[in-house]
Amino acid sequence: MFKKKHGSRENPPLDLFTRKEFVKVYNKGNPVCVNIEINQRCAGGCMYCYASSLDAETLPNDNLSFEKFQEILEIKKLGVQVVYLYGGDQLIHPKCKDMVFYGIQEGFHMYMPLAGLISNQKAKWLVEASELAKANGQEFILGMHIDSLNQEIYNQVNSLPYSLKSKIEGYQALLDEGFPPDRIYGCPTLTSQNAESINELMDWFYSKGAKHVAIAVFRPLGLAKNEGSVWEPTLTQIEKAFRHRADVEGKHMLLVGCSDGKYACQSHLAVLADGSVVPCLLLPDLSEGNIYEEDILKIIKRSKKNLLLKFNVKGPCATCVSKLVCYGCRANAHIFLGDITASDPKCFYNPDAPNKCF
Image 1: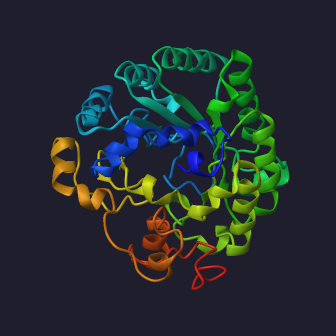
Image 2: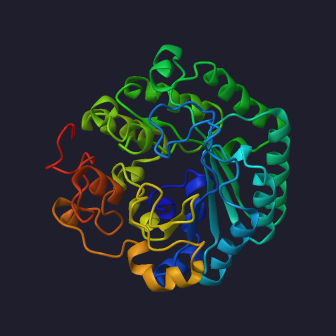
């Protein structure tokens, strides 16, 4: 979001949001992007999964129907132009391909942060979707979730050791089929276990042609809800990782510390697999309604201020030099402190932040 002012390095996953038509919608106080969790099942094996994703018979393959997905995209009427498809593992949803192509045909830019388990057959249709989006002047961007290239470290955060090899092979399958490497970004989760190897992982993503690595700092949700002390990285480890990313992607990336910035937080909203409409996938308990009970346009109209997190923050975040573009991660404040308006306790610019919250 700072490219034009601070540098010329291309970063497709982020540059999209600098477009004038996006900023115009944001300035009107309307959402630009919707994050849709289409399912919960996943065979990725992450032991800390925020969504409690398990490859279990107790979880359905298709939490969100194709018809409900179509209804959600009616929010295009509000100016929404970007759709993120989340899971679980979206690729095992029986209607995932249909959803992707429908979204592109409806004129949306599409993002999919994937678990990384991609067969050759799935790689082929993902490339087809990429080509369709390009022909329409749209973006189709994929995220690859890999937490470490070191098998020993990987085994500490993942219950399925073989999945590391599968994810690397899936990434390569995408590239071999012709998926644009700069339209793939890395999306590792930073934990205390992989903190010392994450810089090496980022460099590997960059060597593959990725222009961006979206580092998700661990939050005690889902499978690890009661294990924060086990997984939480220190503030020192967080700063080291984000400064390394800035060395490659540009120092302007540090303007928002380790958050996604105020623009992202105040222009996105999310729909969970159970139909709940929330401000963020990391704030599942702050539902403003459910699409199975009420039209999504009505929910947003009634609760837009809450969904777009339009409120003032307290403490160092309120006086930070970056306050025009950042107000810290609201999910961190809510989850770690129980106060969504508090200063981000995981930001290395916050002088009140502890090295570890647990």
